[in-house]
Image 1 (tube, rainbow, N blue to C red):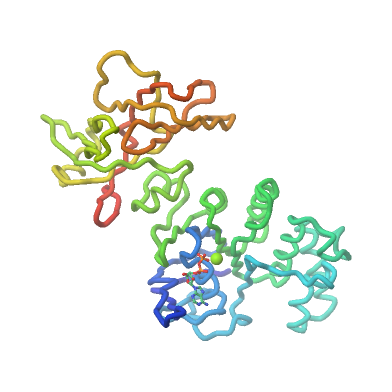
Image 2: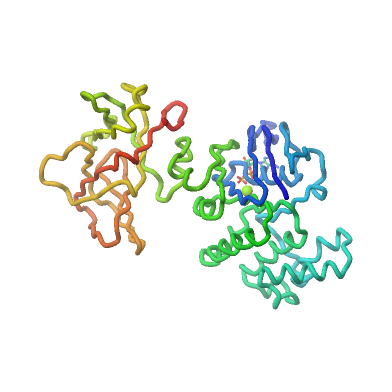
Amino acid sequence: MAQVGLEHLTKEFKGPGRERIRAVDDACLAVDDKELLALVGPSGCGKTTTLRLIAGLEEPTAGAITINGQAVNGLPPKDRDVAMVFQHYALYPHMSVYDNMAFGLKLRHFPSAEIAQRVKDTAQILDLAACLNRRPSALSGGQRQRVALGRALVRRPGVFLLDEPLSNLDAQTRLQMRAEISRLHARLGSTMVYVTHDQVEAMTLGHRVAVMDDGRLQQVAAPIDLYQRPANFFVAGFIGSPPMNFFEGTLLGKGNALVFQESTSKDAAAPNPFTVRLDDTSAPFLRDYLGKRVVFGIRPEHITCSPALAETPSERVLETVVEMVQPLGSETYLHLAGHAHSVVARVRAADRFNIRQAVSLSFEVRQVHFFEPASRKAIV
Ligand code: ADP
Ligand code: MG
């Protein structure tokens, strides 16, 4: 059993000009026993530093780390019941797979019978049993990655910390390894913190996903909740591919209805800004923003595209021109221009659109998100 807690955890580094770099900024998080928590964010946001703090490889500047409710600040890495798989793992090239996996246990003076048993069991789990006598150079990328995992697994720690373990594999192997890690987690029943910069990987692996940006945890939630109810502008734009479309504008009252009116663009080539009449269910919580500037967000799958209408377009409709067509086989992404900025819509593969074709867009108004421009927080 192993729970991990971060309590107002902060880590500052000194930069080259002695300036302070806040790599982790007041992080609070509780990872449950047996949970697989995915920690995701862009490069440089503080993911590796967070893992290294949990592992005991860095000293926090402020705050605490707990494992099973006990503060572990100051406890050396070897006494933390934690094993980390590093992003740039290096296998010992002159050692066999067996010796690579046994190395950590030998250092810890495990009896050789125990080492042999653990390496054998772990190799079985990782499908490496047939490779134990090989050198790393005689393995595929996926197999090497499994040996790196195996080195951590043989220790049977309560907590696994994985730092972008699949980032140097090709796309196909990555998909396969992702599924293996998921199965492995279910089989081991250990607590895992899985770091990745890939939001798809985070969403497909994590029981919950913690999104980080600029040292700060932005939101921690189940994948679907994160997608459907992003807490702020950053999460809304980071989770989902292609990303959410954003428009700036103002909320206005028109009779009893509430409408979003897009800001006029300085670009003379852009057509008239669009107006969307909002759903009555979203109206109550938006009333406070009447007359104020807001950011309107809509995901590509909540836009309906139809060949341009001859008659005057109704409200909620946006006139655009197809700029790029990206067929994926199962679905197609349309990049649509002729507006303040390009809009991306997801359409069925069977619906054929051509470049330069005029297309009318309408929005599913129940699926619209709003954000406060200053705080960048979602308006809910
Ligand atoms: P990520 O893993 O999300 O890419 P890191 O945790 O590696 O991010 O880094 C977060 C920030 O801290 C970056 O700005 C990085 O340059 C800085 N940083 C990390 N380690 C050190 C260090 N040892 N000394 C100075 N700055 C560091
Ligand atoms: Mg990193």
